[in-house]
Length: 89
Image 1 (cartoon, rainbow, N blue to C red):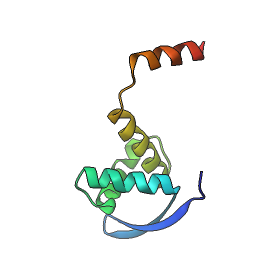
Image 2 (cartoon, rainbow, N blue to C red):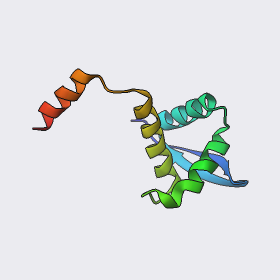
Image 3 (cartoon, rainbow, N blue to C red):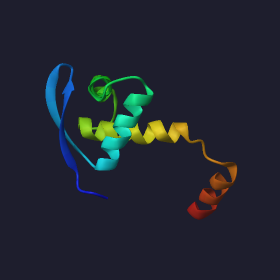
């Protein structure tokens, strides 16, 4: 994966920096666009939930959120579930 990129975002009206891989920045921008939010607003919403999650940084919360967002959007095919179950044995 590419080196992490440091970018500034406004979170709750304050400038903060996050270091994420380019793929996560792209995904975060895509999610914000899909949800009709700015990246800053989306990050503010994630920061508000940070204490409730089992993560220690906003960057980690963003990574988890991006993964969960796209996982929920792509339901697993039944045959893929079976293949994963066999591989786990």
